[in-house]
Structures are given as C-alpha cells and as structure tokens.
Image (tube, rainbow, N blue to C red; front, side):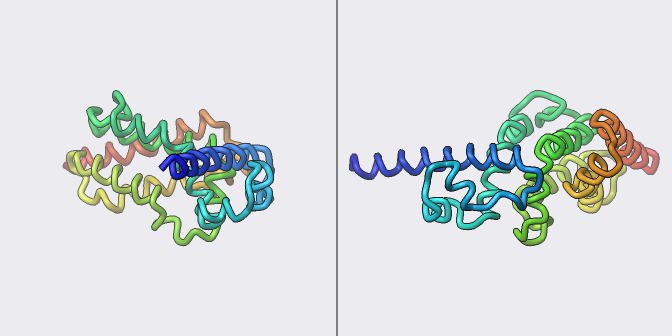
Length: 198
C-alpha cells in the first residue's frame, strides 16, 4: 500500500512538473511547433516514456495544459458571481462568456492556436469547444425572441477562434481592448436583433 501511494504521488508530481515545463516552453517559444515532446520531457526532468504514458501524445499534452489554464474561468462560470456565474441574466451573461473566451485566447494565443490546429481532430469536436458551445447554447436559449440558439452559439464562438484572434492581433495589430469592444458590440447587436423579432 505505501508503495502504491508513493507511486501515485510521483505520478502527480511528474504531471505537475510536465505541465509547468510545457507552460513555460509554450510561453517562451515563438511558434507552438517549436515545442517538442522531447523538449518538454527534458525541461520537466522526466523521461519521454513518462510523458507519453501520462498524456498519450502531443495533442493530449496540449489539451491537459489548456484545461489547466482554463480552470479558473470554468470555476467562475460554474459557481461564480455575475456576470459570468449562473445567476446572471442571459443578456449580461452571453457577452461576459464570450469576453472570457476571447481574453483567454488572447492570453494563451500560442497554446490555443496549437490546440486548434494541432491535428487533434476537428476543433468543433474538441471537449473544450463542445463545453463552451453547450453552455452558450443553453444561455442563449433563455434570450426572448432568439429562435436558433444552436447556430447562434456556433456563430458567436467563431468570432473567438484562435486563428482569427492570431490574425487580428498579429496581422492587423488590433489592440486587445478594441477587439474586446468590437466583440461586445457584435454580441449585443445579435442579442438586440432577437429582441426586435420577438
């Protein structure tokens, strides 16, 4: 029994070391493609076999790191106060949710881009996308006059795709606050049009 507990503690410690090393590498490197599993294993002080056992492959490591960074937002959405939390009115919560997604993508540009483009399958089938879409669809379903919450959730989330965020920041050099204001304006116009139709 003590051996099993010790081995479990080692696995937890190794996982935390790997996530911290991967986090640092993705933050420092210019392109996500510059970070290899060997780089992460070396930086974490573990063997590549440990890395592959814990995360499966590079996409699995990216997903785990993404989820770890997303955890504070998930907690705010699930149990926090308005405007992100579950008690917020839908017309306040929808823009707040999308702003949270956009800010997360801006703060984690390289990681989000690597995950959405990194061969982990369709980004629309990714667990994090399905979770955001499901939540947004449910909140949009509470907006009076809005008749297609499923499509509207997809359309609004498209404005926060990592490749679009990267293009707007990198190519068009749109400042963060302006991008947030533009998204808020767009979301509010979508919500206002639903009210006009009701």
